[in-house]
Length: 259
Ligand code: ADP
Ligand code: MG
Image: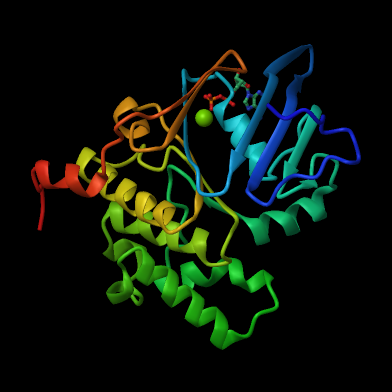
């Protein structure tokens, strides 16, 4: 446990800490009613972790991810991202942090339809100051990391769901984020394709990327290094995964549907 509270000024996080949230609460005000979506969430995530978040629908997973991803702010509590308290940042400051430090992958791939894989992957770099050459190089590198170097000039309609999700992962990586947040990234994919996507996430994690993944599938959660279970806006379980499988090994045991 960490003896220093997040409110004390002498609270210096060590270099290995990416995320520290303390007593997060989130309320949604809906006219007459008020939903208490997060009810005191505290957690630390270190560099190189691969955390899966499970829990029933409505338990607060997406609310939590949106806060981690600087898409939304907590109603109370603190959020330190690489030691910086972002819980009080205004919208434009949050947007800047988000673009620099966070990579997002969602269930829907959210690619631009009339835009090639290369151009989709380049999109987040348009808000940065890097040169055109560097942008193109980074996008090409990201596509290579997800095994799509050969498809750079394909359009989403020419790609399978798994390939589209890989483009979305490349896009998420292009600004070299501190953390990759994936909310149900395999929710629209068949089981073999899901494991293929997880194999890519495991490979990225092996090379040092910190990952937080929401899934409702226990089989998918087991590929992470640590599993959290949310219930009613609180973390009810937080356990390391013992003997986690390697997705590349599991793929060898699964039948191929296409190809
Ligand atoms: P999960 O991702 O685990 O399904 P959510 O974080 O989406 O859970 O939702 C947690 C609770 O907050 C639910 O009761 C949900 O209805 C409510 N909620 C989520 N987002 C909003 C919103 N934008 N406005 C109002 N209520 C919301
Ligand atoms: Mg959700």
